[in-house]
Length: 254
Image (cartoon, rainbow, N blue to C red):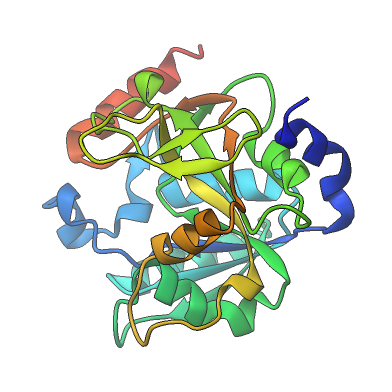
């Protein structure tokens, strides 16, 4: 039995019902589309990336989502207001970064007073996947064990990812612990855009903008960074042509 299997039995001691949704990025690789529309509102098969993610968070039992905004922030705030008017879960709050873009780590750190939890999900607003047999978010929440993990990342095999042609991010041992890809090597797993993180990771932080990678590297040093393999197919929507690739993959579901 792997560490992830064991954690699935005991990890429910910490209920996670809150998510940080990272929606502040400028989406430069998707220009000119993102000159007029923020990337999280780009539509794939008739539904925006942000709406797809929020709906999946709600289905996984997330009751509250904090969404940060920077680029074309008014459009995202307007869409969140529409969802609230429609009575759609989860409850959404806004963390305003109009003054400065803080990257993934700095943006999450600014939102801590709104998150108000010992552990929470952190998700890229453009995260998209084709589901397998289970619910990847529920599976990851069930697998998180704060006794042995500081952070649990959703990871996907690089060879089956759609729209991704990079060298991968991580290797994973038999217990689920993650290590960084070695220089000039190819790694079997790519980060798939969602992570469970403990709030106490956010200590001794740099001023201003910084990446969550800083905190993940600290967890690696303590052997407390783990991976949960995505049950499904990761759809990397990083460019405008990748939208069509993702739509074709979703259409395969019938």
